Each structure stands twice: as C-alpha cells, then as structure tokens.
Image (cartoon, rainbow, N blue to C red):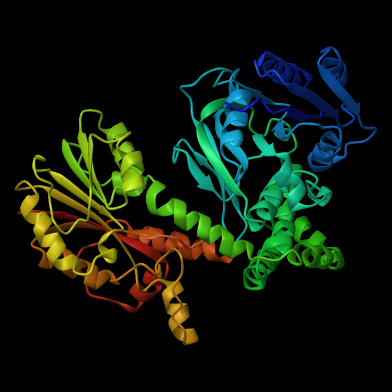
Length: 543
C-alpha cells in the first residue's frame, strides 16, 4: 500500500455562504491524513469569506473582484502543494470517504489524469445525503458540436470517458503540468473551462475515468438559477470558444455555420414580432462576441493546435473503446417484453444492457454471451451467467431455453448473420421474442462518404471498421423474416441534432417514425428519414 499522497482541495467561493460551510465541513470530516483546504473567494457580497476564515484548516485567498471560476481555480492551484488536486464546488458536498477513494484510485492508475464520481441532485425536493434520488455521472461532449450533456441516472459503471464534470473531481498535478499553463483558460470565466483542460489532457495521452462510488451531492446551477441570462450566455459563448480551441477545422466550421444560422433566425424574430427570452438573447449575444473577437480566438486556436494531436479523433477513440462494452441502451431494453423471465443478451459486453433489463424486471434472469473474456468477467458481476464465446454456436449447453434473445448491434459483426439468427430461432421458446438493433447503411454519414468518392472506415459508428455486414431498412426486415420470425415492430434511432435549423427535421423524422408500419410502400420522404436514422430496432416473434 503506497504512502498517502498530499491532496489539495480547491474551493472557489462566490456567495452562498450556507452551502460553502457544508462543503468545507465535509472536506474537514475526511479521514485522509495529508490534505490542505484552499478557499478562493471571488469578492463575495455575503459572509462567505468569513465562513471560510472560521475554519482553522482553511487557507483563505480573497480576490478584490470576481475573477470567475476558471481564474479562481488557477489562483488556488498556485497555492496548492499536493500531488493530487481536488476541485469541489462551493455548493457541493462530498461523502466522508471521497478523498480516500479517489486519491487511492489515482495512486493505482498512473495513466489516469483525473477521476470523477456519481453526484446526486440536491435541492429542496432532494435533501442532502439522500441516495434514492436521481444523479448525474460523467459528462458527454459531442465531438461534432461541442454540446455538453451529463449522463443522468445511467451508464453508471466504471469506465474511461472523454471528459468529466468539474463540480467534484480529483486531478493529478502531473497531468495539469503536462497539459500546460494556464490550468483553466481564464477566457472561459465559467463553464467549459474544465472541459477544455480535459481536452488538452487526453490529447497528451492521459486517460479520464468515471466511477459510481464514492458519491457527492451538488446543488445543480445553484449559483446561476437567479441569473438565467448569464447561464445561457456563458454556455453558448464558451461552446464556441471551446470549439475554436479544440476542434478540427471541419468540425469547427460546421459549429460556426450552425451558430451563424441560429443567430440569423434569432434576428428575424424581432421583425416578425416574436418575443426573445433570456435564452435566445444570450445565444445572439454569444455569437456577436465571437464575431468581435476572432483575432483572440484564432490566436488561442493556434497556440493549442501547436501542441499537436486531433481532439476529435481522440474522443472517437475513447468512445469507441467504451461504447462497445458499456452502453446500457435504454431504447433496446424498453423493447424486451414485460413478461419475459428468461433473457439472453448476445454480445453483452460489460453487462450494462443486461443490468438495465434486470433493473426493470427484478424477477427476470438475464444471461450473456460475450467473446471478449475481460468484458465477460465484468458482465458476471451484473448478470446471472455469462458464456465466453461467439454467437454462432447458439445456446450454451445447460442453459434453459429463453423467451427473449437480444442482439444489440452484434449481427453486423458476423460473417453469416442470416444463419446465426436461424440457429437462435430454434433456441427460443415457441412464441418467444427477438430484439435486434442494426446500424443503418443509408445514414447520412455513409451517404456523405459515398458522394465524396471515399468510403472511409472509422473506429465507431455505422462505418465501424469491424463491421462485416451492412443493412438498410428493407434488408434489415428481410434478415428477420428470412430467419423465420414474424416481424411485429420496427423503430428508428434518430440522431439529427435537435438544435437550430436541424431541429424541425429531427422533430419530423421522430414523429414520422412513431407507429411505423413494418411493410409499407416506399416513398421519396423515406430517403430523407433514412438519412436521419442511425439505427433500426426490430422486434420479431417466433411463431
């Protein structure tokens, strides 16, 4: 067991003195033997600074002005002496073992730049300390648009991720130094600053991890709830700043084009007599700031890009490694019949989908088949049994005949999915159900590649380089029916962004896919709908 490393806990404070007291008390309660607590007060107008000073363990730094969260963390880091640096929001409370578990994790994982953990919602409806309410986990950043979206009450097993929430996170000081100064870019002021740091860290080859324990509690947006315009403004402006600093040129231009179209559509609302709320005003002003500061943005872009490596490619690699084995696929789990009691998840990965099925049906038995031994071992912690091997051999010896078999994006990896599906039809009980997810070869990603004249395989997605077979809607239907199943239902996974000018198209594609008939006369609009569809979900029944 290595000696405990010093941990520097940095808390940036701006008002909310009552919450700050709770945050500091939680850190003080931690049993970690070697820690220091640094509170940087950003010129609070209440008694937050006095609250921090009342703790003898706290090193208090008082700023004369509000320097923002990013610069506040930089100031705290300048006074930190720890091998690990914990960022804890002034409205976040960690459990007593949080420092011990996260620091211990980093000590055991030298490749890890940081680790984040499950954070429960804390508000008037969800009291502090409650572990029964919803929680958010790691943060997903779309590498094409830069939009931040935390996972909520899902995907909760330990995994490598592309970014983490900065509300409560433990970071290795060596990774901070390696990513280069400043630690958090002050231009961000608030929001996206830690996302930008993590982007720089993963481009340097560091890894980020999420764990479901230990836990913390956070008053989400407590500091900005009374200032909605400010929240929307910083989020909109900093997304564009983030794209300038990190995105490859093609992705950056796409983000800027969408922002330009958004800004013009917002401008038109005025002449049309439509009222602009805080959110629309903020987005308009954010784009205006970007237009007026292009020299600054290009300078920062050049500085970051000079350090090398493609951020977008790095994110795709990380998500590819995690995605094969770790997604719970709630849209697939929802198609499993409610009365199914014996289920086989073929290609179960780490067991995330099977775990979600068991959570919805506590009395059901879920078994998995997985060719990768390391992932099968992880799945055994969640499922009733796991067989290590391929799917072509059918039902493992000694297993009961299932009443539902799930193929979540696995048949496209098989040389002969038609024969494999027939084999599994015989394994099903009469009247049993098969649930299948297949990527759509008529998706706009594939069509764009064909039009460009180059069909380039990728690490994930429809053009995953490990895919051996490709399906459209009609050939997916043929696959299921030729295997002897009666196709009961077909659904689509729509991935068109629900933002700007694309939002109406996404809405239309989603609405048109509701109660979609299995057999219907093909029309021209089906081609447009197919371009928006990344996966088909099919439900078949063994007669």
